[in-house]
Length: 556
Image (cartoon, rainbow, N blue to C red; front, side):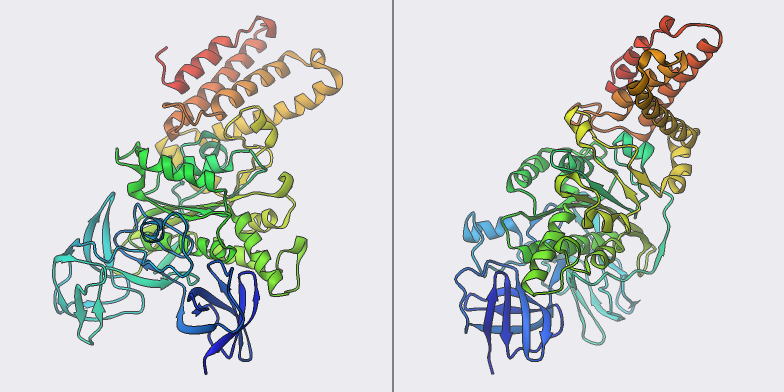
């Protein structure tokens, strides 16, 4: 008996009689729109539809596919621009024009493109999940073709040559065909051999993050901030300049003009480490605010699955989500249409657990199979709390599972201080974990310099509060020194110019040199005061000019 639509509520559709496992896909209506089973009650299935249901009518047929939403993983992902369910927007635009026609189908990878495959295994080899079969040169990386999870056996045929992603490159003795690409359900974490803590930092090139609030490779950070505080600029700067082999950028529910800027800028940018275009190591997943909310909810899972795929090849992957608030809003909208019991501020009661499950997919791992490969997925999730209220549910749920918080302050943003990070509210649980790496690669006194500068900024905040009550004239000379040096630290060391060729990115060595020079100036001032010099006789302007010249790469 053919299943029929019995109820439509926005992107949610109920169909009966339809029996399917949770998260399995179905083709909905006469236009065969892609939908996903999210609830089963008897023979009535509730589906979320990934496309606009405008014009759909009760009584239209629903066809169950028996498979869940999967990502097609293989050569051709780098440089791709996908929507939330993995369709390549360039080829979709060629087929349907500027607007995606309902029911449009397109495989993620180009089925016609030939790839030069070099086999590294031979007939008779016993292989298992994650074992390397061969390699393909793809843009900025050497793409490893791996045995998919769950597949094992003896190689019966395997040869080098030019193949498409859908053509067999070989087979096992049990008849299982081997391909350059395979599919994986996006809501299921890819299996790994071992998880372990990382001692290497995720180097961002932003001094305030690397120095004060570092994140370990395989860690996670939440970036909450109100409107206009620079969340998107920070995420885009990290995508452009961070030390990652592969970047997956998910524009989840953001305005179309912001994603247009990303799509316009990225092809023109050059990776300063390799000299190659940034797009050669990037995958962009675009699901703007005018796209269906169901696809928005799926987009972050598509992004993390792509990130895990490159991680399993032994790459360091940075996953940028902009923003998790828009994802949570999609979750709330769908929960309301299902008439579920609302939690705080209308969000579903399972918001925190869903966020936790997602952030747990970050980590540094040893991949399955041979040769031995270590990879990492680092997740940076922007949050857009209404009115900049960090007590709202999405921010609080994120802080419980993220290892670092980079809190953005609207007042700093209004002062044109970028990145507008509030160093009092922000924190990192990784500072001690990555301090030995920074000490070995940037400066041996990294941890002490960090602690001393944080203490200096905290002392300055206390003195400003005191000065607002009793007036600055009541402060002692040492207090004036603290406030002036702290101002130099804030304005020269922590502030960066995202458009300056020498200041948009700062190496750990440059960051340490600037921080240490500011601290040395403070120590020199302390010694001068102790020797009887009055504060009015101290001239800190040469220090400021020297630090600016050092920051901007100008010869003294």
